[in-house]
Image 1 (cartoon, rainbow, N blue to C red):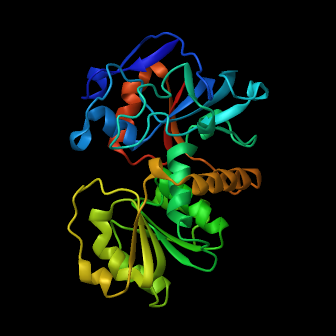
Image 2 (cartoon, rainbow, N blue to C red):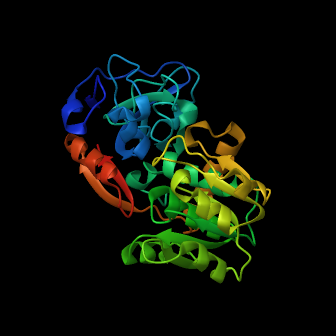
Length: 332
């Protein structure tokens, strides 16, 4: 099979290469998937780049944790009726802080635990399916980790991003009123199309004041946070008493010093979301919800660009630059 590989961390153009690799064979409890699309997440780019001290834990790595394709063979103990099933894949490389798996989805074939190959809703194509593992499931967890959100007001920081855009749609489908922060008019249109009640341009407006105006001085029940270090002062200012900040990243500063009493005085709940470590019961709930939303036209997966496997280095650069209105996906 053709696969993207790397053996050391570093710049994409220097360490990534496309080469022939042996076809994998599914072991007991595994399925063999012919990959049609491989999603690229910031986590994949950080892992390849060696961000925050990450190291290569294997002699050779095939990158990417998300993907979608078709089951072409199964290992012992797996129902052969699954052959031919369209699926989306999650945690193909494992999570942060562990060696994880060496072989991800940036390849023509992948052997993976059958439970990590989830039936792809008929309403979604393979490219969209390759964006469910991290973006959509992280969004689900950020929105629903503490129960139903019906009647709540939720602030989504970075609402035009891959996770943020999914979070807007999932929260709206759950009955919440959503305010999203954006950085451009195009991003605002993108977020409003996802069902947001209002958007705030963080570059041109006083976000805290605007949130309080929109909520008639009440603040928000929940914040979905893309960068805790950058926005924690804002989050504390606009949060209702006993509200929750659900943060899934803090890339601008991995070791933020937080304003303790700004949160403590409100009895705030700080929940850190790790898309690679969603509890099994919550994961099953999320998988079912995504399928339901897709089937009822309430979940649209935004894709900014697709690249062929051979252009993975450029695709990684696009993810690193950021500002994309949608996911970056490899077609395989």
